[in-house]
Length: 96
Image (tube, rainbow, N blue to C red):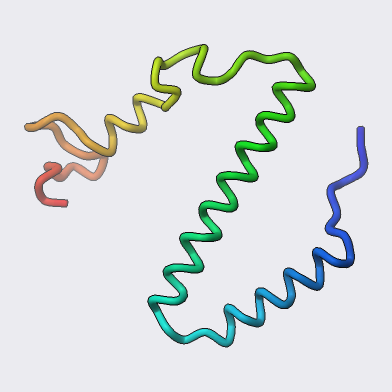
């Protein structure tokens, strides 16, 4: 097994710098923008990691197997249930 992933010293400093910048920000719009940037970066990193793993393991692209759109259709159906159905909490979707 390989050693655990560790941040370099430069990455640790950058993380601390950005953490302090977040702590010093009280503007909700600035924090929303930052949250969206971090979400985009996280998903980009996730996609890059999956791409590298596919390259190393020779696995097919996830869109090639399973659902044609590459999404978990059961999860999507839970987000937009059919009219007249109930959510897992027992409420109709138009109540939410």
